[in-house]
Amino acid sequence: MSKTSPQVKTWDKVGYGLGDLGNGMAMQIIGSYLTFFITSILHVPGTISGLAIGVSIFWDAVTDPIMGYISDRTRSKRFGRRHLYLLIGSIGAAISILVLFFIPPESELTFKVILIFIFILAYKTFITILVTPYTALGAELASDYDERTRIQSIRAVFFMFGVAAIMVAGLFLFFQPTPEYPVGQLNPAGYRNLALFTAVMTIGMILIAYKSTQKYIPRLNEHHFETEEGHSFKQLILSFISSFKNKAFRLVAISYMFNNIATAFVNNIGLHVFTYTFLMDNTMISTVLALQFVFAVLSQPLWIIVTKLLDKRNTVIMALSITVFGALYFLVLVLFNDFIGANLWWFIPYGVLGGIGTGALFSIPASMVADTIDVEELETGNRNEGVYFGSMTFAYKVAQAITVFIIGISLDLIGFKSGLAVQSEMTQIGLGAIMALGASLAFIASISILRHYPLTKPMILEIQNKLKIKAKG
Image (cartoon, rainbow, N blue to C red):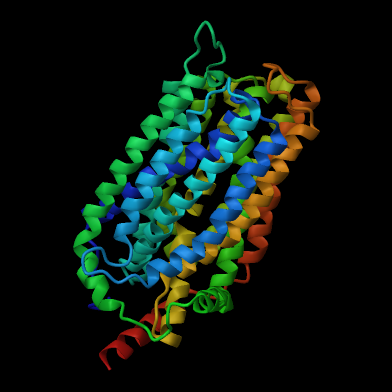
């Protein structure tokens, strides 16, 4: 390992990873609850909901590479390239979450729609300011091939705990049935309490990540020098285009795009499916999700071992294949939903397959992106982690924006009625089919793209050795 990138202390890895616990919570409350909240609690039509969230994701996509470019070119002895943005982004995202879930359901429709558009755009802006520099920071903390995977695995575990805190603990603790709301997830107060909890945790966890990695700012500042590229809008566009000229990065980014399309289907319609297709209460839903998250976390050591045996590309392909089987199994449950009902035993294979498969997708692709940046550094002498991660998120978020808009339209097309506690049989099947088919097809597309990824561990080690020699010379 080079002297400019010493191994990061274990507790500092943990501290950095804890930041993604907060990020996971902030992203999951929007990704998994907002569509349901807008349609079932605020009673806004699905098409409008899909349009609002779709526009916000597109805005998020556009601002990601811009934020990456800005953070790459930020120079501060005190805050480095990334740290100030962690503070600004976490506070802004927390406030935006609070406002969104405190919109009064009894308000006039136009007023609710205006507030939704304004504050979902505000949230997406601040989450970009937070997450893009945070992710780039993780990629630049270490240069070692396996060390990167360890850092990303720890980060992924905490991200999954953040997701679980919202989807599992959140459902169980904040949406208990009451006489007024026997279906707990239809209680508006639950969303307000969950939003407050999320806001506090998001800021708190990012502060821990800030303090844990602050000591590395001087070393990172030494490694990253002022380039002669300039800071113009033209240079931003050129940097964005340049990242996609990197074949290895381009393939990872497109594969990751399809992974996140699958995630968009699961997140944005999953709560609808469990509530209306299988008639589950909050405890049952949280149990299924808990099973999935437990296996996602437990699979992390397994995937680290498999990566060393099979390389990163083959490991991710294996994980994607497992998720496809899980999605297709879920489709079978949907088709026999009258027989399956809310019998949790039928959902165990789905939870196990989905958890193990997605466990690798939380960590390894980000490690692969860090490897592709080595290629650029060898060719140009520069490392633009922010631009690369911003470009990757641009690609998948544009696709997500379109996906969410399609989901919103689909809710209206299959006859979803927010005022009905029990939907028609066609609507129940339609909800589940949209989720299962959408996810499985997206994962299959991801596999087909990733088969062409060219970088292997020996290739990366050779590139890093050349970088060491170049640095000494």
